[in-house]
Amino acid sequence: MRLKGLFFIFIWGALTAYYIYTPVPEDIDERWKLIITDCFFRTLSHLADFSELLGLQDYMGVMMFITFAEAVVPVSDERVLVTEERFDGVEVVLYQPAQQGASAELRRAVIYFHGGGWCLGSSRMSPYVLLARQMVTELNAVVVSVEYRLAPAHHFPVPFEDVYRVVKHFLQAGVLAQYQVDPRRIAVSGDSAGGNLAAAVAQQLQQDPEQQVELKAQVLLYPAVQALDLNTPSYRQNQHMPILPRTLMVRFWSEYFTSDKSLFTAMLANAHNGPESASLLKFADWGAFLPERFRSGYNYTAPPVVPAATTSTPAVAATAASDGVLRSVSDPRASPLLVPDSALVGLPRAYVLTCEYDVLRDDGVMYATRLRRAGVPVTHQHYASGFHGAFMFTTWPAEFALAHRMTDNLLHWLKANL
Image (cartoon, rainbow, N blue to C red):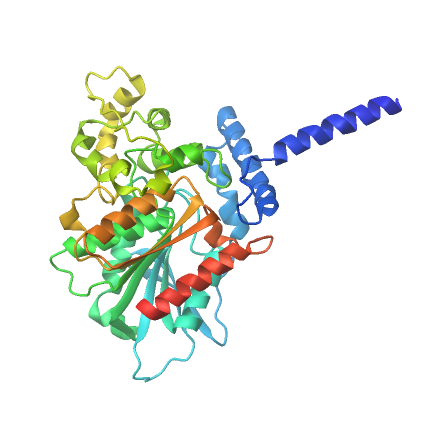
C-alpha cells in the first residue's frame, strides 16, 4: 500500500512538473516567475478550449476571466482626478491632475489604447490604471484611457472606429481647452493590439484633410502591425513562448476579423492571403526590413497568394467567399505596416518597444525600420531578455522588475519628447 502511495506521489509530481515547466530560455527575465505565471495562462487557455469544444462558452468568453480578475474601480485621490466620460459615444476613463484652476501652464496629453488582442482587456484593469496615474503625476498630463468595443462581438473595423472617434473628439479645440491641454503636446499610445490601434490612428489622422491638430508622438509597445505574414522569424522562434504563443496570436487576428473558424485554420498555415494582398506583401518583407541579427539565419520567402475563386485550400476559399474578410486583413487600418513609404513621411515621432522573446518582435522592428527610413524620428527600445506582455506585469501577484524598468524608460522618453 505504501509503495502504491509513493508511486502515485511520484507520478503526480512528474505530471505537475511537466505541466508547469515550459522551455523558456535561460536568459529571459525572472525565468521561474514567468514559468509559474504562464502556467495560469495555459490552464485558462486549456479550459477555454474545453469549454468551446463542449459548446458551453466560446474561447474568448472564458479568457475574459483575466480581464475581470484584474478589474478595479478607478477613483480620484488628492493627486489625480478620475472621471468616466463618453467621447462621441465611446466610453473613456479620464485622468487629470487634481489641482485644477486658472493655471497658465497647458498640459501634455496621452490617449491610451489597452492591449488584449482586440478581444480581451479593459482600460479599467489595474496595470492600466496604475500607468495612467503615473503619467498624470510624473508628466503633469491628462490621460484618456479608451474602453473600445471588443471582438468577437464587434469585429474589425469597430475597435478601430471607436478609438478614432475618441481621438477626433478629443482633438477639438474646445475639448482641449476644457482640459487645459497643449495642442502641440499630444500622444497616442498602446500596447500589443493597442499599439496596432495607435499606429493606425496616427496614419489615419495624417490623411484626414479636416484634421487641424497634429499628434506630437506615438508610443507603440510591442505592436502587432501586419497580418499578412505570420511566419516571420520571431513567430517561428517564439511560437511556444509564455503569455503569447503563436497559436494564440493567430487566434486573436482571426477573431478580430471574423467568427468563421476557417480563417483561423488558414492563418495557422500562413495560407490566408488573397489577391488583395499580392501588391502589399513587399511592405512586410522581413528580408528587407529586419536587421541580420533578427533574421537569425532564416531566408525570406513571400507567403503564398491564393486566388480566392480557384484555391485548393478550402479554408481560404470559405473565408474569402464569406464577406470579404480577406480584404480586411490587408486594410492598413488593421495592418498599418502595409502602407507605401509616402504614407509614413511626416508621421509623429515614435517610441517603439520590442522584446526578444515575443512573436510580435519582428512586427515592431520592421515598423521602426520603415518609419526611420521615411524620415520619422524613432526611438527603438529593444529588451533582449524581454517577453510579450511584460509591460503590464506591474502589480502583485505577477510583478516583474522588467515591467518597472520599461515604465521608467517610457516615462523618461515622454518627459523629453512630449
